[in-house]
Image (cartoon, rainbow, N blue to C red; front, side, top):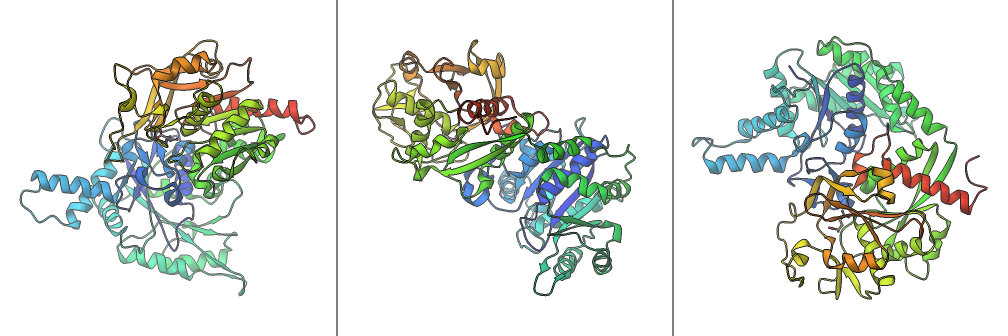
Length: 555
Ligand code: GLN
């Protein structure tokens, strides 16, 4: 029978509830348990797919094509279980489902209310995420409740998990509350009052936490832990100090050393072998002992908020560890790049153009792709980064002067990138765009496989087949592929089903490492193996460094 750990947050957001939940899951996994993580988001959007990266950070895409919260990325990087659509749901989805049932008459004429209809729906969704009662059921599902205790919008979620723990019976669920213990510099003191209050709020709704994870910029001394324990009714060994750490890989060790997993296993009556965190210790060692460094220019639009490229940053770091180097990422706002100043990119070991939407900053990205191509600097274009590399090649090599994507110029003379509906006509004529009204749900999403052409750089990296996740609307226009090929662009992978362009590259005789991929490889990178494409890209950056600045290169 699946047991549950509910993780709530107090005082303020952004304390790292996702990392704490993922870390606990990782420790439990190391004790031999089958674990999954579920994220509940209290906002009304059906999913984060339509939210601006500035507001919400990255949208993480699962194998089954769900657009989810970026915490699911942490989950996949911390544990072995892969996330599915069911591992993340929002208030929007709950209400949508309840209202559909109401319209179908499923409630048999009853008045539909938050309690019990919405709260029951939440419990069903949680059980679904854990595959509860099915052969795929996990031993422990860790359920992270977004938002902060005391918010109106997270109340139904808290009520639902309280009810669920009651219904499951004793020792089937544990509650972990993440709280903030501020250091007041003027007084020279750590203050426990906000923690007292947030736990009071939780207990008011009937939830008594079993453990408190106390976030602070330092360790919480024993006398303060004792005080917190007395005021919150949490045993002192459940008051766990979670100080700032320089790498997230340290968090599992910090929590384990203070007995969090022991406490949870006790509470849930789980008898397991002890935790083994060697792989985490090795990661920390690797991050702290690089043998060199490379610096990659990331030319994007959402550069002010590094959360917008969370998985990408992580994937580059993972690849760095594989090559024993530290990867520095220099974010460059593509809106500021032009032919006049693009030469500033010469100092980097490699150039990366990540995914993105909308016309703003696109010409700067095209400039960056051109500079990388002409100066033989390793280039990786991801999704939009692949599209701009294709546009650039069409304009400056294939002689298609005003080549563009119909995303930016709907009636451009050479739409080398366009919606399938704009290029699928049998006679090759270009249809005009039919504007999609339902923005969430018109994308190519999730994992798809393609065949890789032998003898290409892509083949060296991936072998015969590549299976990666997608999140985009526009595609390389099939009507231009011949012209691009004749001008020297290599189309190195096409999807198995629809023969859509997946990877473009320059021949290795022309450029040491230039590649654009229509998918998002960053979603599949883990700290353990890295990812073959990023591993190869970082090695290419190192090779470039050896060639251009040998004094910096590895000893
Ligand atoms: N805007 C482009 C498209 O929709 C690229 C999307 C992306 O980079 N994720 O096709």
